[in-house]
Image 1 (cartoon, rainbow, N blue to C red):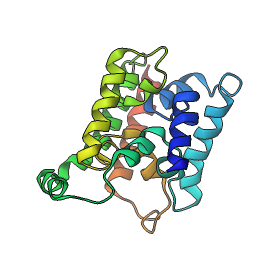
Image 2: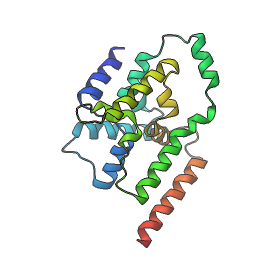
Image 3: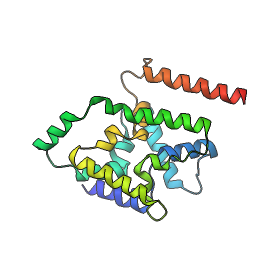
Image 4: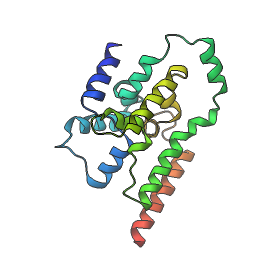
Length: 196
């Protein structure tokens, strides 16, 4: 509990160092802001490299402030209402983060100025400069997680989906559907760059 509170207070509210699609997109286009945000650059490096060499997603499990809040608000043990809610959640909702990631990539291909910060609740941790809609979005995801534990992480987080994709696993050496989709996106990207 102390670690979760520290992550929320220091990494989230204090520094605003959250990994997000908008951060990755911005750094991919403009380069990593080593001098402006060294702490965030270190968090991003750990988040992206750790899953590649281990079987653990360190960022989502231990460093994400929004995940930490969801862990803090979930009930100590499941009650009957939570079991009933979980039984009504369709399994296909788990594809939403992957679809969001693909749509975001496509949007950035055709419109590089697309603002992805409103697609995730993470901008709310920069509460001094964010829009009210970001705070409302973050609060809604936290309230939902009270009844459906880790709801945003499971059914809404494209950044977490990307980190899970990078994670070393027993199937890492096999070609999966998602690998073919990534390959297709790379071919489309290279084609657009070649013909433009």
